[in-house]
Image (cartoon, rainbow, N blue to C red; front, side, top):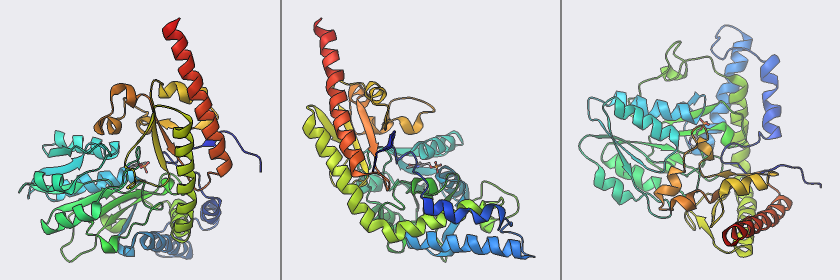
Length: 392
Ligand SMILES: *Cc1c(COP(=O)(O)O)cnc(C)c1O
């Protein structure tokens, strides 16, 4: 098989839609194009049936009940709905929110919006591996705490947080717990039947589904969670998120969940073997590299590597046939240095010398072999040029 360029190693930003997902979506554009909310004819029933089937596939992937899945336009919207909706719903009980410094901008920017509206937010620090400590969460809880939000897996360094423990603690204190699980769902097992998580956000396009569709898991319980809707009109999704459902995208999301469910364990082994090969190939071929994140509690497709004395931008530009990003690429709309790498204690120079590799379902061994060679070669060349400069 001949390799195709560029090589895609940016699977934390988005993923290629699985061809099986694309196939599942086609009929819902021009054949079964009904509105899932139309109750009086076959077009509507067919669309509704397809949406409910997808809801089942997605619920099964995360150990939830179908009634607990609310469709949204993606994780950013799910996170906004969860954080703003809970803050408004519980405002009479308190105004304190706890999160971590390494969260995705979707959480951090929503929190700063809430701060502007009078809520108090504690941004917990993390250790040098990017880990949030449950004890730290416990120690900052006050009588006014209404919400704790901690991401399951970090999108830059892949660190996996002990959310089961944090969620259990929040449940005992009757504090709502939300997790941004966008990088985790579909990649690692997430079983909400075994955790006291109240709300969980995730997105189809990070798990080989289409862009523009996501979900918010909302725990169904005797004491109903008070989540105030942020988009009103029509009362879709039990009033939590109005608007005509994107049926083809939801069908694709469901198919992506079904595939993840049946192929996850095998895929994990294959992808983590490739990731390990990439890391050892690069770190053994070059001096002064360092792997960021947690040695074991990390996403199996992630490698975040600091190349001392090299500007990451320069390295990336010099190997254009490999699609990777710097730690900050996820927020490239505002290109500031990665807040995640800073939070784990990297110097400014090291932050600017770090590259994130995100492997995925379609990554081949051939691509990894090529990438190792190219990264090692290119890094050596950049370092040599730098030395010429210094000593000329
Ligand atoms: C991609 C991502 C988001 C945003 O998801 P969208 O569906 O693109 O809105 C939020 N959190 C994390 C951790 C992500 O990786």
